[in-house]
Image 1 (spheres, rainbow, N blue to C red):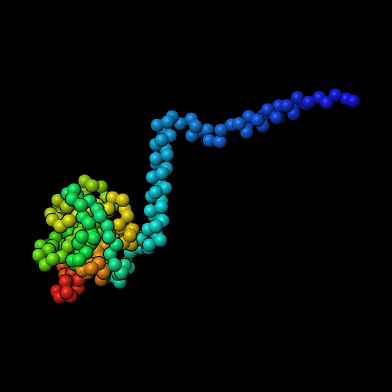
Image 2: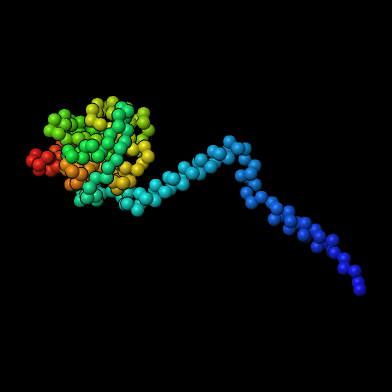
Length: 214
């Protein structure tokens, strides 16, 4: 019988296959990254995934296509939330929803927000004495810019920061500024997108007066 002899080319092919199978599956560039750089890459990637997820939820809720003026409330009741005020105090909506609540979403870079800020502040002392709650929800802003805005317009009602960008998604905010008028008990009576003048704001506030009386 003839002796079987392995082909030198076959041996080289087998060795190459072993090397491929044994090689790590990580991309070369990733493996070459120093550990701090790799950690930063992973953190940034996780942050981007979170942002994309938030945007996806926002799009599902209709965020991004605003219609100015008064519209039918997209919420039957105001979702509860707890946020930190710019002065460090905690605002818990669940503790306040037995009173009429005016919630408005704003940002320092929003030009219409700059127009309506003095109007809101002018009515705040009167309606505070009548048992109302005013709350400004700052979003998509730098903390220092928000504080400068509050100082510039001398806003004295509670201001919170939606840093996690969760409350504005929950409320389906589609543009800035947007206001929600919540009756005692938490029912959302109306919402308004765009700057409020004094007459419009006063009329909408009176609609959520305790006992239905302005």
